[in-house]
Structures are given as C-alpha cells and as structure tokens.
Length: 84
Image (tube, rainbow, N blue to C red):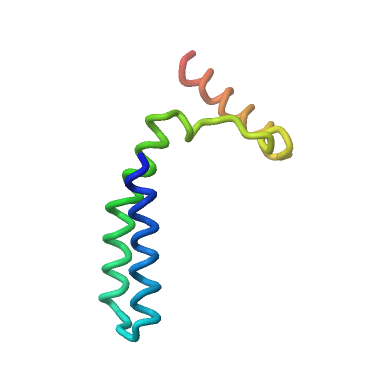
C-alpha cells in the first residue's frame, strides 16, 4: 500500500523537476502522461483503501449533514421494496 503513495510523490517530483529544468511537457503529451500515471497508481490506492475497509468508514461529519437522514431513509425504503 505504501508503494502507490510513494509513486505519487515520485510523479510530483518529476513534474516539478521538469518545470524548473526548462523541459516542459505540454499539450496532449502532458495530458496522456498524467492520465496514464493516475490510472496506474491511483487504481492501486483506491483498491488498497477498499480492501482495508476505508471506503465505507465512519466519519464525525456524517451525523452533521442534514441531507444524510433523508438519503438513508430513501435507501432503506428502496432496499425494503426490493426485498419484499
């Protein structure tokens, strides 16, 4: 799980080095390079979070949002409708 985070840092160092070194990648090549980098490493990060159970975790702000209760009610009612 630490490798993808480290590689995101490596990618940032590569971009910063290119920006200050004068060898700027621009246009469609920059777009393709960024998308490929994110698709490769961000996928590992999201997969690691999902496997660790962090995507459905509890947050203190969950109870503070006023929209949360109606959405929970709708989800619960829809689940009862599907399983009835």
